[in-house]
Length: 432
Image 1 (cartoon, one colour):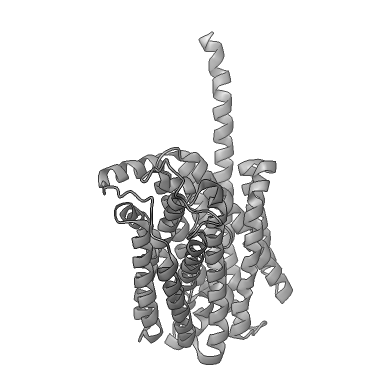
Image 2 (tube, one colour; image 1 turned 135 degrees about the horizontal axis):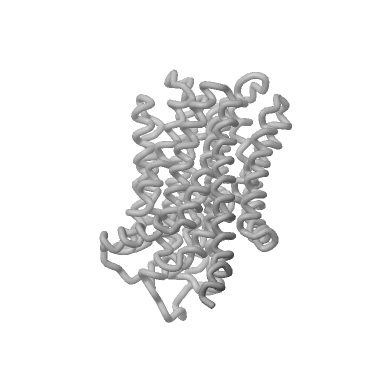
């Protein structure tokens, strides 16, 4: 989920090795070998298309509201429907990729999502627009999990981090550039032209993916076993630490989804009155997330996982409070802090899921993605409702409530860990 990717690439490398174990790595891809560069460009293009499409309407919500006479809460469903459908479909589509293949699942996901994207600009009503976006989000759910699995099976372990980094970069650039592109095009020709441009960008990326992605050499089809999948998912949900990590990811994304869904409405109104193009360019702040998520590993090394979470949540809270100011500089600095805190917290939580799950890592990570995108969906809608009811202060209040939830869960985890460490010492005298 990864620097500035909004989290879809948080599936771990180890996740995919369970269904398709491959002992021999001599035929795997690595830098300098035929196919590695093609594979890298293909997955980079797929990442750009995925996140450009997924959040294509987020920077356009004020224009969508004006076009359909909708409130912020109603228009926000054009984002929440896509992320919510993705959250619901990640687990089943990742299971299907075990049976039918990673490459096939990625191709099918892109084809459906891109095709729907070409119809989005012609949506006759807000209801139709939301429905099309939901289908698009469901289709896109098949790509992130399959991409991580494909890389784990086809790339040599020593080259895996670099390969995943390129896919994550595609996610980041797609999510950011899609928002910026739509903002400027909407200012000139309206929101329909803007989402149409994103659709054409996604078509070009899909064509690149289709012609450049190497065929899978190391995939071994598995059998669909719903009972086994249910047992694995149930065991993860029964793990208290994993449940806390899922909740933390969802709450962090609630803050992020609320802020970036609503910020456009605030900036186009007084006292800022910014044009749509400038509002779209605000998403350049996402680059801060690339830095903070990359620094998360060092923070954990110095402060521990919970210490890093406390720092991330404090940074996010400080940004929320600072953004209440009426000076544009204060709002922008607040967004920087919110973004830095969110991505650091997300990186810590998602990587902790990977370390905690000793079996069924693919499902553990898919559950984290589901919680993460459900948080995005809830945050976008609730943040817009709070903005409609109480202005930006209402959205900030919602964000602070979610932040308080993260703090409470982390404190509970700290106390539970302390109690676990003290328990053997308390039992020892009795045994003697």
